Length: 275
Length: 285
Image (cartoon, rainbow over all chains, first blue to last red; front, side, top):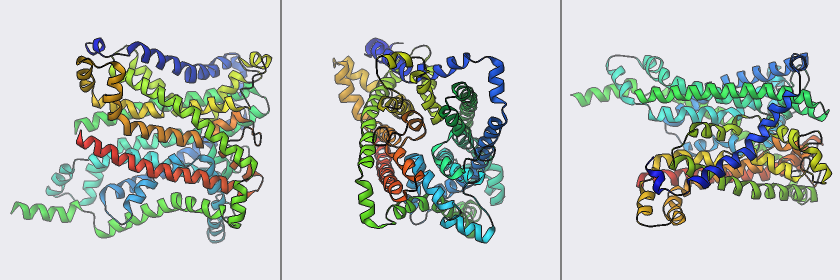
C-alpha cells in the first residue's frame, strides 16, 4: 500500500491495539472457553439440560422475543412519526429516545419495579381495572426489556426512513396507488431489513440483560428466573462448573446472533446501495 | 399543468390523512411518555418523597459518598485508557492496510455482544480463588475480585468499544489526504496528528468519550458479579442503589438513582449538542 510509506505509526498503533485488545478482551474471554474444557461432555449436558436451567433459557428467550416484537412495532411508529411529521416538542422526544442508553440499568430496574409492582401507581391501576399483574411476573421482564429495546429499533429504522427515496413514493402514487398500497408495497418492504436488524439487536441485548430485569421479575425459579441471574446464583453457591457451562452456552448463542445481525446489516447496505 | 398534478398527488397520497397522522403521533408519544418520561420523572419524585432533608441526608451518608467516589475513580481510570486505545485502534485501522483488519474490527466490537453478567464472570474465572491466576494473587496478598481492581477490569471490558467505534467510520470516511499533505510537507507524525487529525475528529471523539463515561459510571451487571457488595468499600453508585433498594431504604435508593439519572440527562443533552456539532462540522468540510 502506497500510503503506509509516508504515514507514520503503523507498528506502534497496530501492536498497541492488538496488545490491549488481548489483555482486556481476548484473554479474559478465552478463560471461559478454557475453563469449560475442564468439564467433560456428559457433565456439560447434565448441567445444561437440568430442568431449572432449561426453564431459565425458556424465560429469557420468550421474554426477549416478546419484548423485541412489541418494541419493533412501537419503535417503527416512533421512528415514522419522528422522521415524517412535525409537531411541538419533537426535538425533546428525539433526544429522550436514547435515555435507555444513558440511564444505568439498575435505575431503570428499580423505577420500573416501583411503577409496575402491585402497589405501584400503574400496577395498582392495572390490577384493579383489568385484573392484570405485571410486576413480579414474566410480563414484568417483558416491560423492562421493552424499555431497553426502544433505542435499538428507533435508531436503526430512523436513518433508513430518512434516506428513503421519496421519488419511489411519488411514482407509485402518480400511477394510481393508494396511500396504503404505497406503504405496504413500496415503503415497508424497503424498511423491513432495517426493522429486522433493530429487532435482532433488541433480542440479542434482551437475552443478556440483567440490571433492569431483576428488580421487576420476581425471580421465581422455573417461572421468572432469567439466565444471567441463574449464572450469578451458581456463582454465589461456588458452583463454578455450573456457572461456566451456562455462560458458555449463552456466549455461543450471542455470537450466533451477532453473526446473524452482521449478515442482516450487510443485506441492508446492499439493498440500500441498489436503490 | 404538471405542477398542478404533482400538488394534487402530493396532497392525496404522499401525505398521510390527518386522522392517520394524529393517531400515529398519539400512539408514538404515548408510548415514549409511558416508557421513558414517566420513569425519569418518577426517579425524582421518589427521591424527594420524604422531603429535601431526607434526600440530602441520604446523599451525605458515608456509604453513599464512598460509592460516588468509587464510581468516579472507576470512570477516571477506564475512560482515559479506552480513549487512548480508541484513537490508536482507529489510526491503525483507517490509515493502513493489513491482513486480518476485518477480524480486528469484529473483535473490537465483541464486548457489546457479551452479557454483562458473563463479562463479570470471566474475571472471576481468571482471578477468583479457584481461578487461573487466583492462587498466585492470594499468595502475594493482592485482591482483584471483590475489590477495586476487579471493578475496574470489568468496566474496562464493558466500555472497551465505545471510542473506537465512533472514530473508525468517521476516519474511514475522512480519508488521509490532508494528513499525507502535511507529512509530505515535512510535518512530524505527532504534529500531523495534533494539528490535522485531532481537529477533524474532536466532536466524534468527545461523543465516544461521553458514551464511554456514561456506561462506565452506570455499569451494573458486570460490576455486580466482581464487586462482592461490600458497603463503603466495593459498592459503586449503581450497586449502592441496588443494596439500598433491597433493604427497603427507598429514599437512599432513589437519591442515588437521582444522581445517576441526572448524569443520564446531562449525557443526553451533551449528546444532542455533539450530534448537532458533528453535522454542522461535516457540512462545512
